[in-house]
Image (cartoon, rainbow, N blue to C red; front, side, top):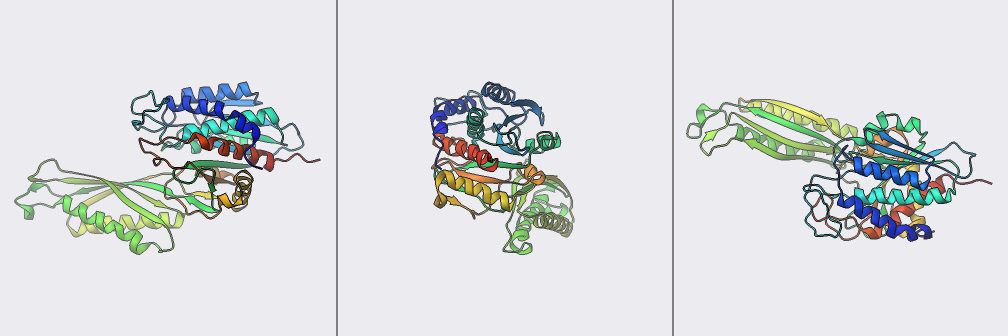
Length: 390
């Protein structure tokens, strides 16, 4: 079955919702306008339950099918928050908030799930409950974890849960998925090197923290190159260096900040251990001392095999089997849908956004032509996963 006719009819309306959300971006948990619009529309559609304040500012809508023989419930999740980026494209619906924009397509994700909600509330051609999850704070705030900790899965009886993300430059009308890890875990580190400051002309009387930090940066690259199995995926990136203020002063301290990413808990732990050993020993070799602060981020997003096959099969109904990649390479970016998949079986799929600027880029914009594909996928997951039985 291709794009649903009713979804196609609704696409101009869904697009208008998307443009409104794009023009009014909100960050992390401060999505009060967005969450209010979502809740208002869900009520107007006739959802059986609309609950706000889940995970601080999340919204959950429940639609029950016209057949009531099953207590099963499938969760569908969309993220609502934007990014602290200044939009540069002069769109008719460009951001009205300086320094904030929907640079990751969450406006499209929210609009597509709203479109599916309207369709499902009209048709109710399923047996069980569709649980529509609108999540805040995906961009670094852990909103997915907050909703899970608020008891969302138990409260709404969620049995399985599904998510998606648009992917720039993946062809429009295509989907990509894989079982197992599809996105990486992320951990942040801050390394503080303490040496002995001094005059640049008298290095023998100082312990040069810039030199120590430089050796640490180079040595950290050995973690992926020499400690991690070449068949595993891992990333260690030092992204900020802060040391000194003058051209003729060797600074007392230097600070390095960066991120580590992995697809498995074993590699994640290995990288933390190796980083600690390298920093300690390199600093000691130069007579410096060091301190490391770790901040654990999102775990890896791991798709469950049966639910991955199911989601791929439904996607193939929408676009055809040849346009569903079932063995896509994992991405080393992170996603807090991982917390939901850690509590319930489910899967996460990539949807083509067509030619566009990359995610988190000031020229990015969600492709409205992708709307009927995503909204149809959500609707068909419910109708296929909760069939009415004679």
